[in-house]
Amino acid sequence: MALQCRLSGATFQSLKLATIPISSSSSRFIFRTLPKTLNLALFSRHSAPKAPPFSVLIRNLSAPAVAAAPAAETSDIKVVKPQWNASIDFKWIRDNKEAVAVNIKNRNSNANLELVLQLYDKMLNLQKLIFADRLQEVERLRGERNNVANKMKGKLEPSKRQKLIEEGKNLKEALTTLEEDLVKLRDELQIEAQCIPNLTHPDVPIGWEDSSKLRNMVGSPRKFDFPVKDHLQIGKELDLFDFDAAAEVSGSKFYYLKNEAVMLEMALVNWTLTEVMKRGFTPLTTPEIVRSSVVEKCGFQPRGENTQVYSIEDSDQCLIGTAEIPVGGIHMESIVAESALPLKYVAFSHCFRTEAGAAGTATRQEESDMYHEELIKIEEDLFSSLGLHFKILDMATGDLGAPAYRKFDVEAWMPGLERYGEISSASNCTDYQSRRLGIRYRPSESPSTTSKKGKTNLAATKFVHTLNATACAIPRMLVCLLENFQQEDGSVIIPHPLRPFMGGVEAIYPKSS
Image (tube, rainbow, N blue to C red; front, side):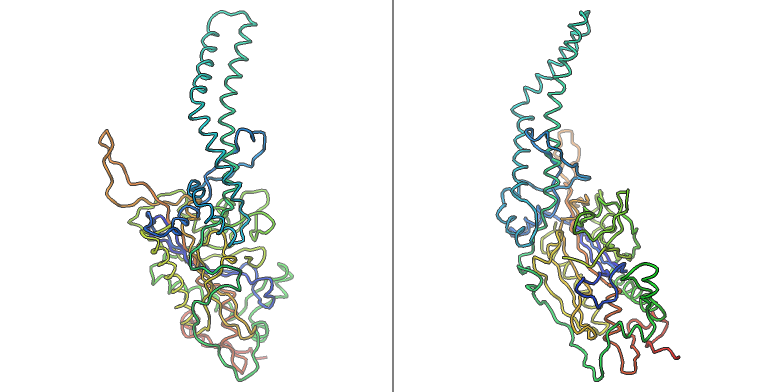
């Protein structure tokens, strides 16, 4: 289930409370595929930041490149045409290439910055050739073509007429070739630039996951005076799920929930929705099939060696891996009124992933960070109210996905597994996704009236920022609750906040034989 919020402005921010499949190394987790999640998503406004250099980096790099194609000399090279175009400031990248290169290295990205810059220079040169140095030549070609057409209006010998026809055709092709070369170059530039990741918050630690920084520790591990069971044993003894039947029906790693586990899942959904709606989030259920281009625009890889996305054969559609994707698309290619921002959504969806997970601004840049703090605070409040012990990590650069500017992970203590396990995360994606999705807002500042005809000129649109956070990763929360609230007699206590959503059930007891 995913809770998603939208904030005002050129920023799309979203909090997603979502079920995340357990990593492949976590084989003792029972829930690994098709989880249900609640995601929080938020769209916020973005105006020219009064910020240090890093905020400018974010603003310009967090979006995919504008479609561009190979230069004239590469016109014979076949380039795959991008499905969509995104807005990116190539000039800024070129002027700040050292900072961009360092960011690519820190994030272990395979983006080829040198190639992007080479293609950009070629594009500029070709544009100059076409629109400046060759402007007169282009006009001459057009003029000659018109002359040929005019000559052909009179009476001519068949041989002369055919010669003029061929000449006109050649002139037209010469003009078309220049334009086609530019299109090809833009296409190639677009594809290469899509690999450039968002920039990174200056406080994010550099390195891999083990370099992540502890942000906060909440509560302490429960002490047991009896042998602790893991969720598999508890679930079996309480008759809460069936793996054998699911394996026959669907294959390994699937499961049936049974009895009170079904009630507990529904309770988690409804409790989370209720709590987040109090904070101004609009509830949504989303489509669970989306176009692959939307998946790409949100920064996910729908196809390829490392994809976690289920693609539908012979179509351009995919199953969603998180509600973040369809919520991101809800305002695609639109201009949101600044007065409507922030927009906050809490979305419920299934999450389909092939395997366990691998690895813009507001009025001021600080506003984007502020909403990120709001999202992680919501998560902290939710998990604290259930009595869970957990820690919050500021994840290192090597653990950030391409869209994330900064990401906080929440890891709860799993006593049966004797380790912490991720149950949630909150990411600030700045304008990386909105530049791809085309989500803008128009500032409400007073428009200028500089038009010669006296017409009012509207303020220029700006991209929103997007944030997302996992409000409730249901399978992992079930693991947490079963292991943390187990009792010596084999029962499991239901935390007080969930009891009203369980029909008053206070505990799950072993079934009598």
